[in-house]
Length: 193
Image 1 (cartoon, rainbow, N blue to C red):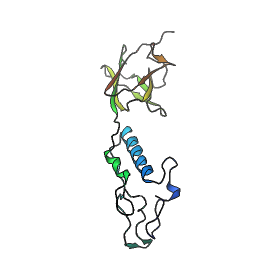
Image 2 (cartoon, one colour; image 1 turned 90 degrees about the vertical axis):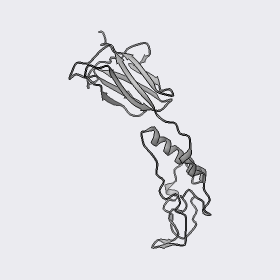
Image 3 (tube, rainbow, N blue to C red; image 1 turned 90 degrees about the horizontal axis):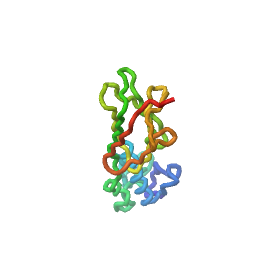
């Protein structure tokens, strides 16, 4: 809420409110659920809600009597539990292991291949694949339903695209992560001129 239960100024006011989360018990609950899901999806281990019980009392500080956080606790002004406390027991979606396996070519020692990926829809990155003579694989964790695009290149300059096939679109393999462990197998070949 944006209301006060005491004379101490609130630490969170209208200037802290996010447009998609109203300053209501339901807005607070949805914010905590969405925040926790984002933390899980990005490899985080948990969410800490600071002072969820810091309701107003007759205590006085140099700022006033009561609590500057009573409008942001997980309890109403009468001490009743609000819906936001349920974020801890909400059913969340968890990342699944995703393995990329490549056959057909093995990089020479000291001349590794690079897996370029757009796994988040907003970030591009390149991962150096091992050049130890073993099968080329890379394993990570991604969210079910996530759309990904990737390609393997012959060097860090991203010179030659090595994945080819009927399901390669605009030079990139495009996949959707399913529920449960996923393995994507692709064949590598040097492009012909």
